[in-house]
Amino acid sequence: MTYRISDVSQALPTADAICGGQVRNRTQYDQERCSVDVIDVTDDRAWQAVKARDRTFDGRFVTGVLTTGIYCRPSCAARHPRRENVRFFADVGAAERFGLRACLRCRPGDVSRDEEAVAAALRMLDPDAERVPGLAVLAEAVGYSPTHFQRVFKRSVGLSPSEYLRARRVARAGDAMSDGASVTKAIFEAGFGASSRFYAASEGRLGMTPSARRDGGRGVTIHWAVVPTSLGRMLVAATEKGVCRLSFEEGREELAARFPRAELIEGGEAFERLLQSVMAAVEQPGQSRAIPLDVQGTAFQEAVWRELQRIPAGETRTYAQIAAAVGKPGAVRAAGSANGANNVAVLIPCHRVIRTDGSIGGYAYGEAIKRELLKRERG
Image (cartoon, rainbow, N blue to C red; front, side, top):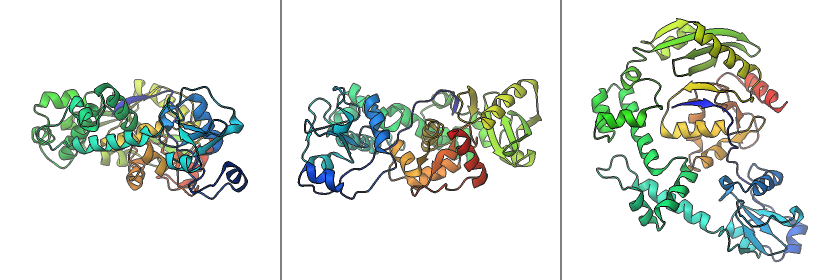
């Protein structure tokens, strides 16, 4: 995956669950504020999403308008109600138990239908299958038009169905190469009918050629340096496409262990310019900078890394929120593993992920560095 760090959109948080139990009337609700399971986003954060009509919050909570007796999606295009007339509910069921009815304009009950449709499509997109259904077949199977289902799927997964399938196959081929399989065998066993299709699918995504990846970076030139920072000694390494490693308290030996057959060159004129940008990003984390990266992972790992980049500076997310944001709410541990597999600390801000109980959680380079990074971002 080769891309640039720049201005990124806001991450996908989840909203407060307000009332999950039976409530006889609104007055009782306002007086008792019944006990619920609370998700890690405040009412103020949810209200910001409503004002922005942020579609990424759809399915995370619904907005109840007490004066009209209607509940809506956060992205509803209807005129915004007054803040004092709004309550946030965990889901459609909670809102309806409270006595509200669904908005006929935004149809919030369809969110769960969208989730079921995406889950069904993911089961059909098996990279091992001899024939994989196209968009039209997928859409017909779940009862949507192709155009609408493309939008629904991409909003949930982050990729279109065809992009998702290609990413799965590229990741599978890369894993096979890492395990020692020949390039040709790995490509065909991953489901590509021809090697040209694999190279087309992986263009711009894999920083190294398949052969170089299998051979520990053979034929690849990596410039590197270890520099002092206020957080400690920092290793920065980059290919011609971008930064491939940023870590603390590591040196040439650790870099050579990762890329044993690459040509490692210390310094370099072009690299020095990149290094200065990286150092500035570390000393002043959270400021927008265009720093090219050359990192790679499985489709799931890369989806997690994209979500990490969408977390605004000064904010945090939990592992559960990251898993939900990439469309895999049950994969909390896998999200944690993907977080830990990040090879470019700070530039992909895995330090912005904390535990559900609010504790700081672990960090590959120690909790002290993690706390300092968060402190700097919060000003």
